[in-house]
Image (cartoon, rainbow, N blue to C red; front, side, top):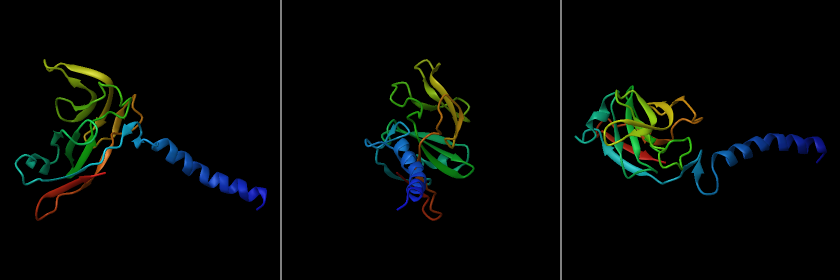
Length: 158
């Protein structure tokens, strides 16, 4: 193989190697957020989850993901978002919280007196899209199968 072909192959494959190496390390961490297996089903016909059948609604789901999930319905599409903030996710304060008014998510939390306590103060839309840093990544989204028309069943997985 001549030298030119070797350089061509190197240039072809190097970006793929770098993208994979930067997005996920050997500990199962993606963009700083640890990989936790998730498999959960619910029905939008169940009274506990029924508000997710309507656009603009959201709810927290504890016990799944790294720091819990935010389930939201945006324009009729259900999203499952990791509450661990993509900016310095190892910080104890790095928790994404839906702000009063229900239109934005920010990194921080309300204290027991309902006063906002910011962490990095990155902000996101209810579909997890980054709006303002210092975060450079949108929120981690889990795979969601949309409600089955006959049963209302939604499935969330990695």
